[in-house]
Image (cartoon, rainbow, N blue to C red; front, top):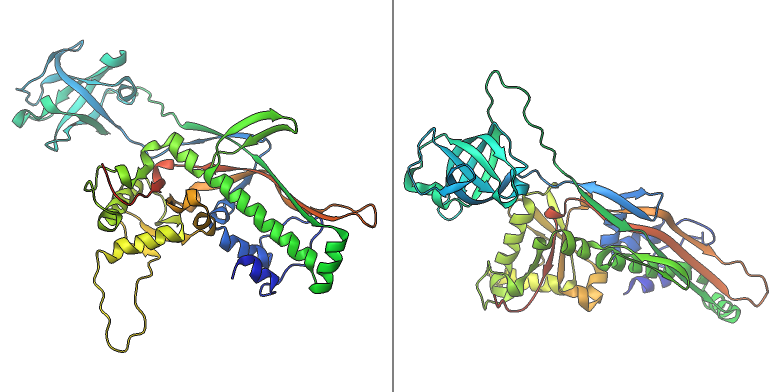
Length: 422
């Protein structure tokens, strides 16, 4: 039974209030609607008012004091590539990117790491030179470079600092936060009946207007949900005035955190040529580990379609054994939670995602406190006044709001394909 049928058959009470009201979260029908449009319900739970249709905010992910080592040198400048022979007290010059060099200062303790051999050497920074691609940190080794690990080092990490007892104030390092901008989108819909349609509907079943109003609300909320998932930031002047659209969840990840868009068909961490049933769980476990590094909640909430839930269960079934014993009258799996590396995943089948083909092959990995909305004009429904006796009855609904997000590193868009070809 569809939600519209549930309402029409009177299973859920329909509020009497129709004209000139703000839809209230305590309305019983709205609670059912929220269960249907689950992702938008989570977004609306984290809502703030804004005084402009264009709004800015700032977000900063987990601090990470690491960067890529271009090379290691023996002479300032830098020059004279290092090959071997470093001992405790040896002065060396670590060539790093300018952006990484700006995070380093005198007194920092640096770990210089070879990601292939997984060997690191410790050093203390005695100076930093900012010079574009030739930027470098001057360091003193704290230990002997056995096996000449420094010559093939690829990464450096600042994990602590050590200063002399007569040190002055350390050099200042400012950490930039990321500025984001989005639009509030004006969502506007209407429904109605001619005077004759209204009279017929009222005779067949009471409260026809109330049901029509709630069906309009359902349609409106689905439009909002699709905007907040698929929306693309845009603005333009039109014949009906200036209009603008909001960036949705998928666009936010693709634009600002593209490494968190995962596609099974091209993923290099699973066996090439493997099917989803064979390697789907490995694929998801790798994603869970990566997004949990900066996660803030106890678990992720993953919105997906009924089709993807079926495929998930197929992947799980491929890893498990099932036995049917005499007298048992049920068989199969129903998985709503996965115990994953770092943070567990709780799945929510979203009816909107189940219905539309462009969303059926996706999983949206979220944390509820990291997604929200900015509201310029709250949702409002109102009945258009009738002037003449034969004027049609019309109900309108409006809202001006936009999607907002924080710490995108902790969230992801997961795409599905039947065969991995990487």
